[in-house]
Image 1 (tube, one colour):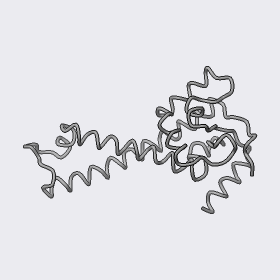
Image 2 (cartoon, rainbow, N blue to C red):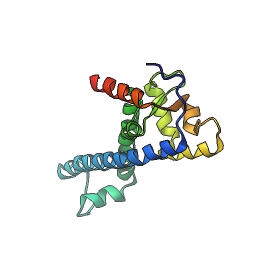
Image 3 (tube, rainbow, N blue to C red):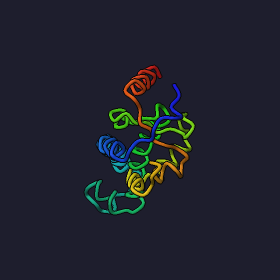
Image 4 (cartoon, one colour):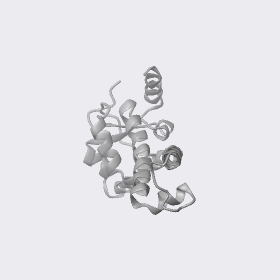
Length: 168
């Protein structure tokens, strides 16, 4: 199925998908934070990280800029990886599936991991979609910087993509 000539998705569809994906991303963010906190707790209890006189593990993590920086970076990378994995596997996140849109290369193929990481970095948490207010070609800032596009799918195209992704 070729999607090279599919129409580009509107800002409203993108924002609706973003709202769905925000909730999924928030869940991944919290799960990643919980996993890292568990690992950090084990390292403190094992004596590999000093307590510096603090009673609670969370105080140790928050008070040290290195530990809190690693914590935030890990959580943000986990969320970014969710999008990279989705875009390189099927071109669609959960929200994009619901709203029948797909992120892809401008030639209609799935994007590479490098393109997906660039797209995630340039998206600024999805707020780059607001650049569509000034672009009549429906190409957002992160679309242009990563040589990708977001297209609107017909119901049949979306069903076919869903069936294909279940086979992988």
